[in-house]
Image 1 (cartoon, rainbow, N blue to C red):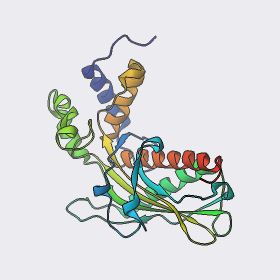
Image 2 (cartoon, rainbow, N blue to C red):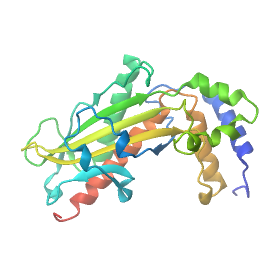
Image 3 (cartoon, rainbow, N blue to C red):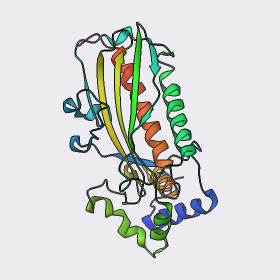
Image 4 (cartoon, helix red, strand yellow):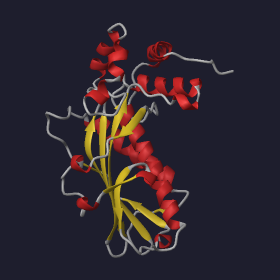
Length: 264
């Protein structure tokens, strides 16, 4: 039976207990946390990756990501997908901590595997472009790990989590986030494998949430959400992995929807 009510303090205690038994996580460990989109056209990185960044608009029905797509494309003709090597654009040192090359490779491998896992049921994965092939080009425009020391220091303050819960909204970040949590930005481009024509582009930024709970789904689900976000705030890359999982699932779902429709 579900408990009738779970207080924030009880949730934090449960999460802290989980932290003590979980320890540190490495990229690819699967300890995914909770993230939220920070979608704002003004915050899309101008790195020259997208062909038409000015066309991006928030798509509420598509996860709230910023996207645009060409009209009249017959997505049903694409039964194969080629995922190109993921690019990484390094942000200024003042905004990003150094990323260990080993961690970076593990993260890129994790993202690629998540994409293959989600897209494979809908289309065949190939390594060569051609007719019927959708070329998927991806670029990470920010890759900021969680400052685990700051997270631990904030938690050490008695009832500090109460103040932290509202810090996101106070600083313009998503509610439940804090300035030291991880952030991951993505720009995506989808091209025709035969002609190279750009069919669609998207952009998104995922911000880590240390405190997240959906109380409308019951106390047990809320406690699980709180614990996932709380535990992930003590590991460097859990929020990045969660963003990769979210993007991979969203791309696969939208691709399946488009392939089920006639050209529009």
